[in-house]
Length: 101
Image (cartoon, rainbow, N blue to C red):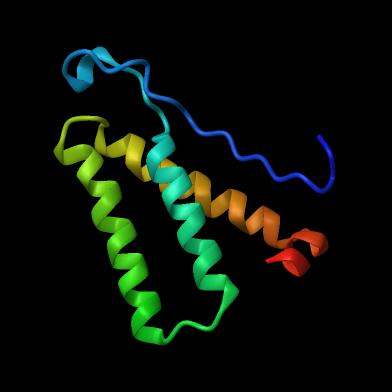
């Protein structure tokens, strides 16, 4: 992988055709990408504290909606969030990433 490229891969839903029990989607790619984007926006700065709180509230609400509509199990959404937090923490250890952020 090119050192200037950052790629994050999360689980993909397997073409949901029925109930959640018919699919594999671990971890939730939607939740993972959403949380990574949220962490980036929060880290960039320039947002008020209340805006950051609202950003995280919306991220939580959106990721939970994946469970409510039956697209993912709760565990899939939680692991998407955890995977995003781990990958973002890893990226924060990369000086070039921090400079570009």
